[in-house]
Each structure stands twice: as structure tokens, then as C-alpha cells.
Image 1 (tube, rainbow, N blue to C red):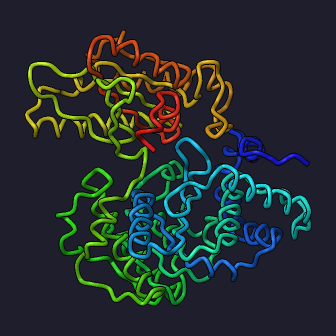
Image 2 (image 1 turned 60 degrees about the horizontal axis):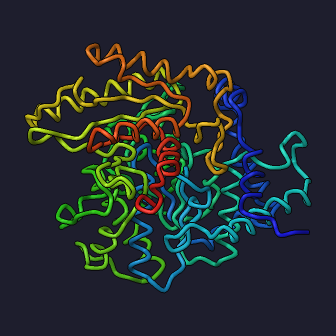
Image 3 (image 1 turned 135 degrees about the horizontal axis):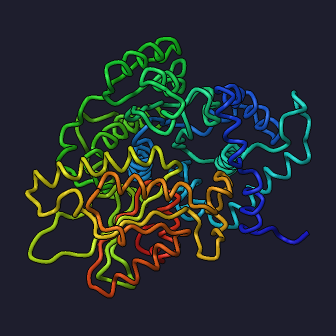
Length: 483
């Protein structure tokens, strides 16, 4: 049989995506489907030839949280690679920006296409060859995220990594990453109301979910949390019989380090990573933890990268255009002239998008007032673009960015994008109507930016969806500077 390619793997993987109807059915179940995720994942793992005990060999640092878990993983990964350069360090995160293989990294680099394809089809074929299931109604193959998690376990075990940083997908207690019996360290980044809030969850309920990653005999770390969340996490640590519960204290000297990830909030994530790494390196490498930061830690924090998040890049083909990716802050207006400023925005729901836009405008207005900038709320942008996450103008997706989660009728009618535009008009009542653009694809949005570049310098903020950010990197040809 001919060798199966990376593209073949992505095509197969995309058949495992949940469609809009499946997602709605899961929500309607009240969480019942989520609660079978752990036993199902364990069964799938067994069907590809592994026991859960074998996952302990991965030497896992398990990280969850509402905000900052990905950044915490990136900092932790950088610290381990700098402290133990001879090690092979695995990193599993989600979602990806441009290529699925970004989710599974070895020593900071995404798996090469040929390696990803090889491990992918190992798992694919083993599930086909061993179809014995405890429940015959269970799918022969798991859905998208769970399948990639299995590929990550198989890749890391096959490559014999020395350490693994494992980021939770959603929640914690019932997430399919939560089957490792004895991770070395567990850590929880900031709690808050995120996309799970559509299910009406409160901070204590979210804390209960996140605290599900704590394990018996394993240090349970967290950043400082809202009081009601911290109480639940402390109770969960006791319930799970964690070896210790630590609200990580500040690290001397950390505030003086220029972090590789932008944003003041990253210091909290870096601090959590420092404490998790120190405990891990003490347990697994016998390195006594220092009170402050060694030169190795400082360099690691400076060199940490997490593409597409709070990132500012200059367009390689249009040097007068600057892209601000995810929630990176635009530069304040200074001097008699300034760039044309454009917002490209999308999210999964126009209704939740209104809240996001309102918060963004309110926070921008307060910051601009403090900076005594000429900007005011309705002058923050010259143009706003609401587009879908569809990659190309012909209606097609880049293979790695394909999604079936949005109803085709919603895409055809641009339902969410029109809801967002309506919300914008109600929030910024004086904003010029002809400067609000509702577009069917990311390629249309980038083309609009290119047209506006003829007027001079341009600053573009891309926010609301990492799939949108990844698609923009692809279409605007920013991979060389952003990834």
C-alpha cells in the first residue's frame, strides 16, 4: 500500500469532527455525554495497545484553567528545555493555529508531517483492527480531540520522552487528558467564566471541574483565585488526597524579566510555570529549587513563545502593516497622524460576541482615557470586519482549519456575523455604516485590508477566535514571522 501522507491523515481526522447538530445534542444532554469521556478514553487507549499505567512513563505536568493554561504550558516547556537540554520534552496543546501537528511538539517543534502521519495511522489502523468494545454503541473511533489525544500519547510513548506538558482540552475532571494516574505535578491557571458559561456554570462549578486533575500523592498547584473558586480547589485537593495544595507565591525577581509572551497577565502564568517546573525538576532530576530565578530560568522565560496569542508582527510583504493577533493591545495614538486601524473579529455566537465587544470597547476607552489618547470609543477603529472562519474566498478551508461545527445555513446567511455587526452598531452608534464590513471568508477580510493599505500605514487587530487568527496567518502569509 502506498505511504499515507500528512494530507491523508488530516482528511481522515476531519471525518471525526462533531457537526453542529452533534454539539447541540451534547449540550442538550446536560453533560451526560461528557461524563463517559474518561471510561471511553481508557477503552480506546487499551484498543491501541496501552494501559493507563504506562502513561505514567510520560512524566506529566498536567495544566488546566480558564485563562492562561496554554501560556503556562509554553513557559513550562521552555523552562524544562533550557534546564535539561539533553532531555526530550513533549508538549500537547490545543487548539492549533495553522497545522494540526502544532498540537504535538517535541523540544518545541511540531511533529514533522511524516511523523505525524505515521503515528496517526498507527492509531487509526489499530482501532480498525481491534473493534471489541464494552458498549457496542460506542463509535469505532473517537471524535476529533480525543483521537488527537490518543495520537499524542502514542507519539510520546514511542519517542520515549523524558517529560510531558499536557494541557487540558475543556474542563478537567472529564477531559480525556485526565487519565494519567500519577502525573508529577498538576497546576491550575486563572479561573473565570469562559465558553462554558453558556451552560450557566458558576466559578465554584468551574473550579470543581478544573480541580478534577488533582491526584493522590501529587502536588496540587494553583494561582491565586477568586475566593469562592479557591475554596472549592482546596476542597478538591483534599478530596483527591493531593500531597500538598499550593497557592503559588510570587517569585522574587520575576517582575524584572522581559517575558517572551506579551501582556501583564503573563507574569501570573510564568509564575505558575516556574513553581511547577521547580517541583518537577526536583522530583525527576534531583535539582534543588532556588528561592529566586537562576539565569537558566530567566533565559527560558525570555525565550518562551506562544504564537498567535497577544502577538504583534510586522507584515513581511507590507512593512507598513502591523498585525496584532488575538488580544494583543493596539498602540496608543501619538502625533499628528496615525495608521488606519482595523478590527477583524469573529466568534462562535453573535450573542456572546456582543458581550465580548462591549467589554473590549469599555476597557479600551478606560485605558485610552488614562493615556490621554486622542482615541475615544468610537474612534478606536477606522474599519471593523466581521467574517466567518472559512479560510478562502471560494468557500473552502485549509485542510487543517476545516470545521463542521457551524451549521451550513448559518454560514450561508452569515447569521453570526450579521449579529455581531448589529451589536457593534448599537455599541458604537456614531461609527460610519460604510466602515462596518460583513464578509464570508478570511480571504475576503485580508483582501479588504490590502485595499486599505493604499492609504498608508495600517494596524490590524484580529480577535475573538483562534481559528480566525490561524486562518489570517495562513491567508496573509504571516507564518514566517508569527509561528
